[in-house]
Length: 409
Image (cartoon, rainbow, N blue to C red; front, side, top):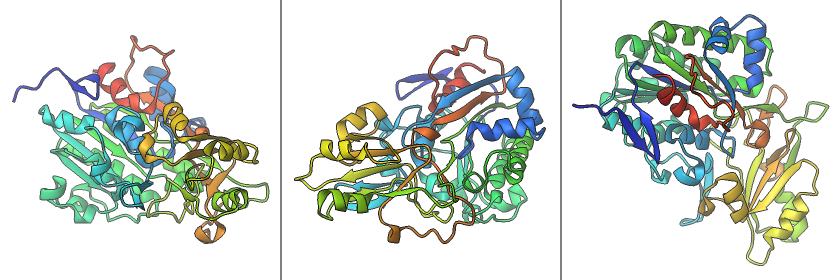
């Protein structure tokens, strides 16, 4: 098969890799995690890469949650184009709130699938299975999750006997081991299959529980650094970014700082038929209680979105609230998949529905979460020099394939 030199995907042209290329999404990687671990001497590979390669701060897509950002990364476009507006949304056709993990919600192809169509060997390893079907949509290649590695089959995932291949036991979904399995699998695949293009996506279990510079956070990043060094030794171009950052969302006594929107709306509207959707919601809420800094509200027909926004912006903990069309334009969101009002909390606050709807019994550390503008700052790192790079450009995490393929080959 004749492989073309470039491929046009979603109105961007990418050079196809001349050497094995690995794009890594480190879930929840607030840049300070890297700074603290490097300063502590725990990331020698990264320290060298920051000096010799490319080190940028970039911005994630909003909401700063896992699904919309992973899909932005692998499509190279914002949610307004690819359609994935959160981990969870209200399906207007059925009136039901559903997980957004079915490929039917995706509105454009991925760079990964298009690269495979062009003749490249492609591999995808993600931590949680909620992302696997979206990341692997249309992909002829290897695509499996660490969460369900023991169930991978050749027919469905492009690989079998994953635990034997990786040489590790099946990890718990609530553990740092889940992310390490992803990275270890990436190294083993590069050693044994040598894919042309590989995407690795971890989980933010550690980041939800441990602040930058804490012993377990530094341990995690030291582990990450070791696997990146192994991939570099195998001759890989490595581009690293994050889906979002992570911050503490607590009062001074350590309790979660939460604004319960359904309760607030009931008092403001004097009715209880407004509907709040929290796009952070997914099957794995033990470490964050489905509390994040972004929410969308569906109002009853008689309610004024503008009046709700104006009132919300006077509430402590709210950064901004805006009607649907304004939010779609300013935040690059699909207008048909958000509510009448979009709400962003400030750096210290999360949004909920009612206290009874959120089980916080699993929190064994002060709440850390994400979703708003405060968690948009993410690293964008390349282990190659790129002298032609425009460093004044407003870089986004979904420019990472542009960086890896168009500047490093």
